[in-house]
Image (cartoon, rainbow, N blue to C red; front, top):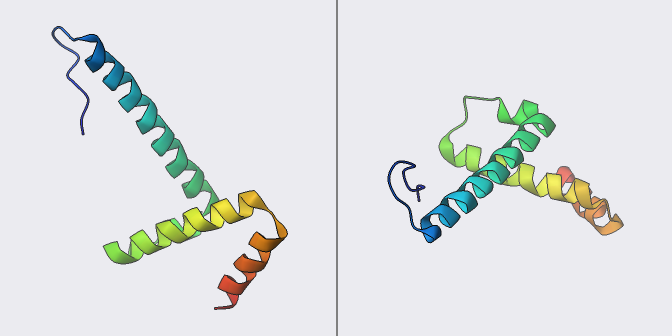
Length: 84
């Protein structure tokens, strides 16, 4: 979905939608930035196929959340995945 064009007259709901759209986009862009910094080596390989890129991205999100959690169960689960 795209935001409403900024030119012309807007109703309040369109302005509200545009503001929420911009906030959501900022959150997604920040998340990509965090993943790119944390997993730079994995995300720089341009030889990957689209399906592989989606898998790598999903795993990076999982690892990020597990590392952020730092609970004992998460660390054990992460070690099991690494052994595979």
